[in-house]
Image 1: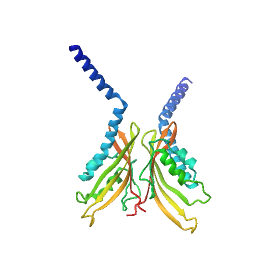
Image 2: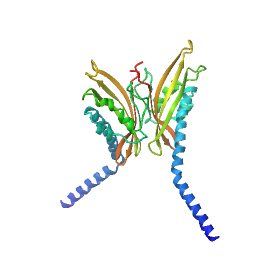
Image 3: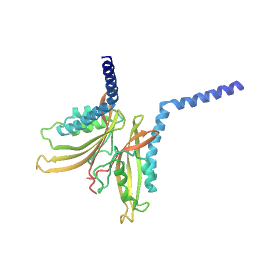
Image 4: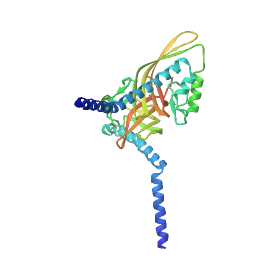
Length: 163
Length: 165
């Protein structure tokens, strides 16, 4: 009985070890870590949490973003400019703009580089507008692992072409 | 004489040392140049309707994807089979060139030694072959390229018109 228990215990330990070292397991966790960036992004927008949003970006001059806003710059480069572009949003009431991400796909290109693609449904709600306006935005986000954290390096958002 | 010899030796060692430190920077800039060449070749392929050149710039893998800026196309093209078919249809040889695209402010950001993101602004002038009427589109383009087996290849493409609403 004791031998059986020992064998059972050893088998369990082997199984756990195998699961831990298999590439599939680590790939899945890397993908989960990367998708967490988007979950946190949703949380940051929903709660108007600019500190959380700030923590998702690499604070470097090398970052860039293409925003779908008509009044935005052609391209926003560097962390300071990117953060400043949120200034206009600070005045909006909570819930004025809501984002939900869909069909998010992660492609891991290297141990420390990945791309996220997908689309967002964006609602601009009263009192910003008379009636809710809904748009679809295509999304490409390049992320880089710096230290132990995946951070956004480039973001390209664009409205789904309609004409 | 002996002191001069030692001094010469020390200078040589210092030179070798500094060259070995300088190498990563020059390698990075060489990579950036190669990445930039992918961006300009992409544009050349568009302007000259050169499917073979376009095909040579992409990683032929199911992992690649592309967002095209025009209407009437899928939301997202995925895999080289889909993307290749799209380019084959859109870069069909013709005597009349209707689109001429010029690139502006191209920029490369290295994510790793083997992965880079490029951004650029493009002006596309379309000339109607019958009426000769011209329309101009302003485009934003993100290309993600990866060094695969020593060659920089496109793995992601996102092109969109400048927002008008």
